[in-house]
Image (tube, rainbow, N blue to C red):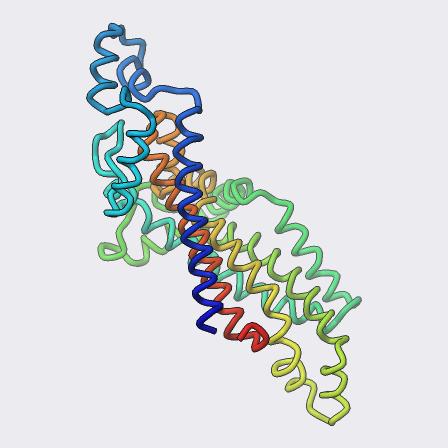
Length: 315
């Protein structure tokens, strides 16, 4: 177990370092100049000398190797630099937005698992029945419908038939818990539906495979009740692929709620990334993309450790 943990941790650190290098290089070859976007927005006329002085002040005129060394040194101190647009620390920009994105992602995961596990198990146990067909239709519909489109339909339905719409401005949990929850439940529902569809399909397929294994037939031949056979012998092994899918989907939610946050007007990190790209804010984009990659790798690392707990063969 210790060897497996250290091996996974080493891969985690090497991958994170490689991602940091790749992010830096790709952003430097991408078109766009934050100084020109910032100073010439709205049709303002600014001389090239002024542009050059601003680039020098931001350090954009230095060699790329110097900029890379400074950025990596800052990362070692958990300093992502300052936003080139607002000139506030990147850590401060992200910390004010990350909370609502995490809340939506966690709530969507809880909703997705609460729907997917019973539906996936029921579909596998009633293979070929009307219930199985209904679950499969539900899953295909959830995978086919884009969350942002479902979000717009949900908002229109609530407005037309219930006369209710979620709050437009951000409401803190400490100020109004119900208002804060109502702001999160709609995006969490539309994203959780897609998540539940993916997990339910995977759980159904893996459970059908496990039910045909020899050890399950042996457990049944011993006269064990069907409930014990399913819960103790089949479901534990069938959950392993579903855990992987759930982990990957959750990691995707942490960095993939860009359009959903735009639809529901949530000031999360997805919306912040859209703004940073529009402003060609290299420093902020670097910090956001590296944070997304870090979350993705942390979730994968946690899934690997959970695998080791659930699967004795890895130990």
